[in-house]
Image 1 (tube, rainbow, N blue to C red):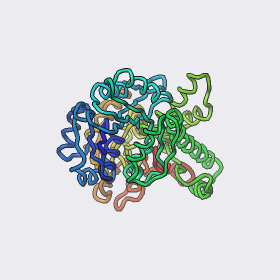
Image 2 (image 1 turned 90 degrees about the vertical axis):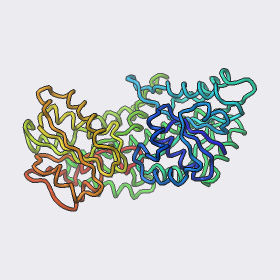
Image 3 (image 1 turned 45 degrees about the vertical axis):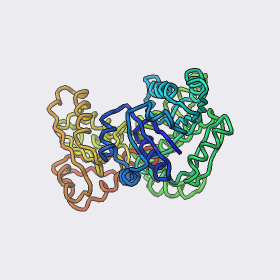
Image 4 (image 1 turned 120 degrees about the vertical axis):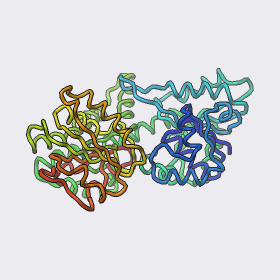
Length: 440
């Protein structure tokens, strides 16, 4: 089939590569000219295990463009995978979704199907169907489907090719048939429902994971008070098939581009209908407080932090990605700067992104901190294997909070910090960030 993917981010690139790998002819369109140019040069702009070779292997069936007309005119299926960032009130910004729909309506010249993969509020698909019906070309039928994604950064390729289910929110037999033709090569089970229910499945699934992470972090806090081992507790409850093992690793809370945004959006959605989701509010409250646990331990261990040296091990919000959006590590670095450590040494294991990208974010954090600390120094390191450079960020550090959950940070092959190596005991917060698709 001829498929166009609107958006060349995590969801769009992974979906495009996987569908091309299954034999479809795929065009991926994006407004970012630099990103498209890099992709056409064979440079993948994000780090996602297995994605780059998948794109390279399917170069004959996968093209990248910024040309809307070229991308949409003859497509049989168009998948919208553009960003829906959060707004200050907790709702989501849909400007890119509506702009994409406008361009689709103006460009398509044949009957087609539009599948919304972006995470959108319940009811967006119905509004989108009305929009394209009113603004599309005369005589051209455009069906709109809700087809939410459940990808996890770090395992996104596997999550696409071996998904536990494909959710289809459809309003016609034709739409269901076409979408099943798209996914037929994957031979995966379907959940077929209406558009609104499919949109709600996405929010309900993601926010349930946030609830689970906040719950195990609360249990970890109690374990620390009573002298219990949170790892043993998590193992014991995770073996229960009604609960499951994933998302039961205590840490400094969830981060990333999905769980924080979706929890806020679902709470905001319910509030707009006069209902208070108390469990979701509690999960968000716990998560906000949890991100400071490592910082509080460092201060309790060392006392006054002014003129200390800090090494922060891990900057991404979870293992297997270079994404630092909503990362607890950044929040901790910002607070460290405000409190006074002279040097923050950051590491980004297994990242193919330049440390300069992280540097820009952390310099912004520094400038938001205490003005008296603007002389703070940053040193950044890539860590493809920790043995060679491990001593560099740790040498001479007074505190080494580990954020991100990378196993490389827990088991260095050589070197260890001098002076007071801040170790977080097994009873509580051994690791940092958790996020969508991680083990929590």
